[in-house]
Image (cartoon, rainbow, N blue to C red; front, side, top):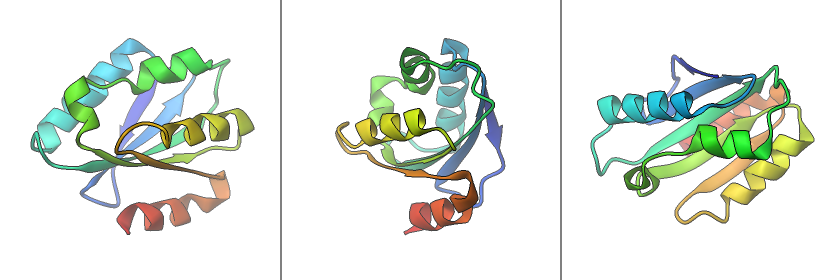
Amino acid sequence: MFEILPSQDPNTVALEVHGKAREEDANKLDQYVESNFENNEDFNVIAIFDELDGTTFKGLVEGMKFDTKRWDQFNKLAVVSEKSSIEKFTKLGDHLPGITSKHFDKSEQEEAWKWLKQ
């Protein structure tokens, strides 16, 4: 489940991810982006993973799906977690067109925000 958090940066969507990511979460995120960003305005995402109840790669992909129109707007993805499997998923994000992704440990959350603001 995604929870949208207050953001430290107006160009960044802050999410906390609990348990398994679902299709409803992707829809909620898409609606948030549509309400807060113009169709051609770039944005970043910081995803803070907490209490992952057996989240699978497929579940992560389903939860992070956006309308294809959103990929043109997506700029950076900072993933904050303590799981090495999530770090591997983050590296896959670098292969998506137009997206730069980076993994940060839980203790590096401030560094993640700094990186997003660059």
